[in-house]
Image: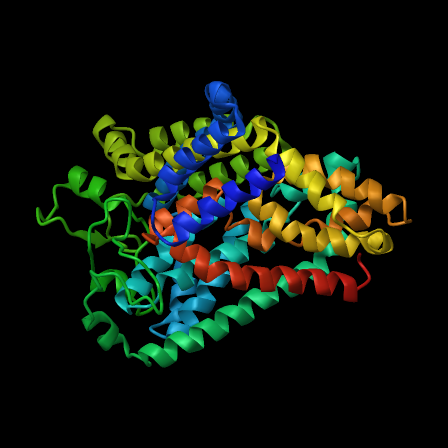
Length: 491
């Protein structure tokens, strides 16, 4: 019964958000609460929620201070050289813009943090998509899928979890997987090219002057391209492009900091009073730039990422310290610090609120025992004849299981069972561990991944639209990784 109710709860949640009958935050809270009562554990709902909140509180704290930290780094211009290079390549060509989105997301994903990747990618690319009236779900879908493939880095999480769960060395899992993961990343670039060609055919080729002359689209895009209403950031204001910013990026309309401009206006006194924001992200004259502190900020970021990889401190603590230090050094005056914090407050509130709402979902799913029963049912459904092919089975199961449950639930709850079943048929735990990474391209669009709410929130895309568009391409990418692993004899 718990198995059926567990699948029913997940299906109900997905249907409601994809059909836009409920908002994700409401569905994450109300659906599990109703199913908890249906299970007969309504009296323990509070315990499950508190436990779920306790488990996700460090993640929420990490995201809160990561948004502030990397928001400040975007404000002061740390990522401008990378963004300018990508945008100079993009020009006003939709195909190049989509490919540039994939490349930028893949590069930034090297830090191992999804929320960072999405903040920088959306901040840089959003104004181009908006100015050219491109589909915003193309941006979110490509960014999420690219990040999903790169999420398999040893410091990204899944590889470390698989190594811990099966008592293996992370390098023995990851290094042989590099060719298969490279094929997955290539598949993302090919996907970006195909989607970009489709956008080019829909919109046509534009010259720079034509791109600059276009007004941003204030209304939702057609259902065929399913984007969503968008301002450049959490404030939702419609943007206006500065030609100076365009020129500085090699001739394209640009911007980086969604949600930050309102705070900049408050600090600088240049607000319009008409509810509009200016895309100032790559404006070389923006007041938040700190060129004299560039190498300090670069060193601080490198030290922060190094400390994360070496696990010198818990990640939330590192980001808390990093955010405090970045604010203090770059903006020593209190009014400027308050303006920067206010500029990113909407994103912080939206993301942390979504994380705590997800804590209700995961708390009920785990507390009632639904996850355990669902996992046992899935593993038990594998035919005995498939035993010698448990690596392939694990790879295929990783797609739905890492989508419908957290990485912790899959790698610590399900993977050891799959590895034990494989060992009985002579399949090594290393092969099982490598195969378990195949589903990460899809996992990054799971409603249980907090970072995805950073992505859709900053892009002003409905989560249901993102899900409908992205899932099929993410599944295809995951299958490419799995097929390449089999072809190269890795699993």
